[in-house]
Length: 90
Image 1: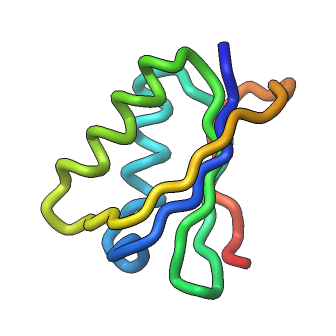
Image 2: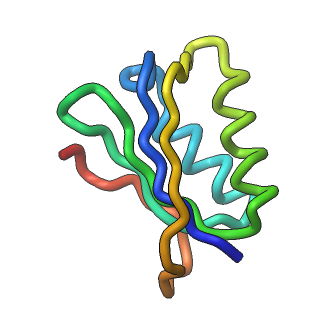
């Protein structure tokens, strides 16, 4: 199990990315959260198996409306949580 903090840039707001992320995370048993930032980027934390996190990101990148042009990721400490949520915008 790992936890990653991610910052996505590009055409990532107004294209359903948060809802697609929540659905894909739930399907893969990932926990964490996602939210829009005021600068137009999307911030998220994902926790679970690394291969499931990678598959989720591949799923997002294959969507024809979502265009991720930048992705910054770092591993952070695990948290005790049980589900994936969409947080209020920053």
